[in-house]
Image (cartoon, rainbow, N blue to C red; front, side):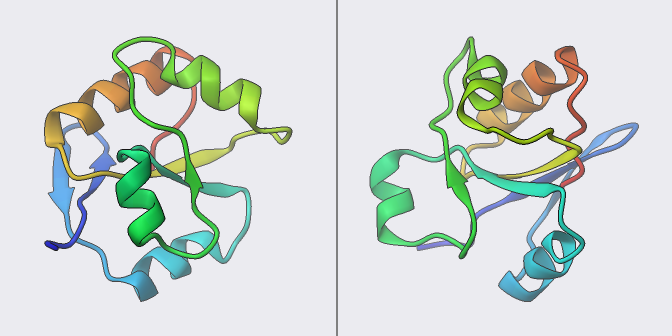
Length: 102
């Protein structure tokens, strides 16, 4: 299986492959959530410790994420294999004023 992609949002969307250590480093400070938007089968087969699975959908991903989590979201790191899905997910979260940092 190829490494999953992490998409960083800034002025432009940039594809970055991060190692598990790099992901852990981002999460160490707390308040950052690793959201795995891959299919449930992929999540079940392998996922970083501490990640949360909420499968991508064209609409309602941000709302489902907010409803599923009982904590404020200060930033998200998205984990996925499909660039178009990650771009669409970033847009949904940004429309809800949720920062996607990686």
